[in-house]
Length: 495
Image (cartoon, rainbow, N blue to C red):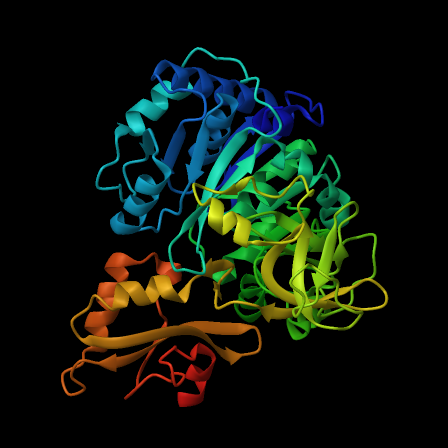
């Protein structure tokens, strides 16, 4: 099985049907790619990459902005039997250097606008990308279902980003979402608001629409919240996917009413918990349904609401058909199940085909993520007598920044290097329902000369925008246990 071939051929689409539409400001169509032209470009890139001397399984670091080149190169690498590493264009040189070193990427492909690793190895830039797309088409690599397909980096609880390695079977494992969340139709036009480096966008914005013969719409203009209502209308999107915080901003800043989205069937949301208030406000103002999904980089979504079930506000829904999901008793070391309505550890069975192959070169961490036959998601939840799941928050300290999970230790490690910072602790602070800010609590080296702006500037030079603290609090000391361990959950009591 080859993931790229599955996505582009599964639905046996008409080769003249539109697979990808690139929209600019006002929804103006800048590019339109048919299934035939997409597949030809993907196979040309696969053939061109083979000509560079890459070997099967070599990692390819993608340093690209949000354009049609991203999906072409991502799927082209997979088609050729290589392992692409999608990364955020916001990453700094230091951050991307860590990924390059850890992954051992043999090749870095960039668009000339993103930061590059200090030792990138072989580089292909904008001119070479043009050559790749015009190369003689190759064939799909005859990869097996369990062969590596792509490697994506996510924040780990240790504060060190770690690679999540996915198999070729990851695409076909998404079948339960097709009707369990989207309610896909072949004529659908799906607009996704996220960036391509994110598994949410790669899956919901590309893999799933293409595997269903639908049209994926990519927007490459300014991202002010008030533009989205007009964009949904002008692109004639029948499905719109975003994080809850964007839906909230659309309601606040956009012109939204019952007539706003004549072609939209319903909205899709994931990446953050959808609050009951936001769900009800969206339904009240638009008259459109909003279906939530719960997932993570290691497996994508596995719990959702959808067109074929009754939505219960505050619940992300039920396990998708065929998924083996459970809530484990937190006190049990052997994977015993929790009782109905008892909060516990949300887990997915190791037999789930969408589950990652493992953490890249971290066998101990991979093993530690399991309790018996169950993979621990790091989330807490409970289930009710009707089979609905209810999110109870994280079981660890990972923070959620607009759908990206961020380890506080990673942010702290950077801030500690600033001379004005004596000690620092970072956590997410709720400022209102559904809105939290990454906040740094700093014990300054010298309270009289401490310069918050200088620390923030330092953070901007060493952390991607979504990882940076949005608020700073100067404190005289950090809350600790008698043994000296940081009491992170007690930080907000100092506010």
